[in-house]
Length: 104
Image (cartoon, rainbow, N blue to C red; front, side, top):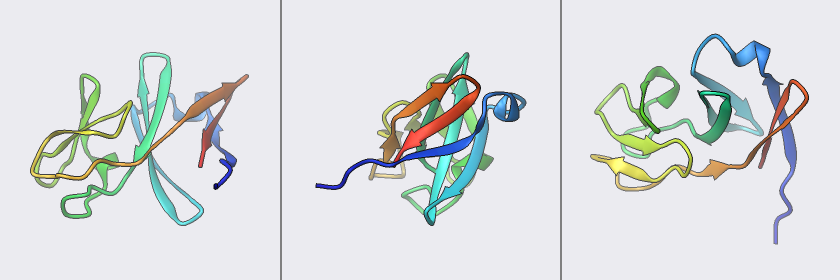
């Protein structure tokens, strides 16, 4: 079984200005979403047609893909509205002081 590796993705203050950020970690595209004072991480490549979700918009607890309107739950990665059929991977997020980490 694969052991999760904690990866730093930046500081709370560096990600405070916009609710959606795309980052690349170990060749994986990750979407970091800020909702209130919480951060969530899911895949950043839409499972429908490969568009970057970081270019989309937050709608409640979902992100809407800018290309064809698929919606994914930001907490779980589940598809809320198609045309996408496959969920995004989700990654646990932890905060240590001002630094944000995700478990890969």
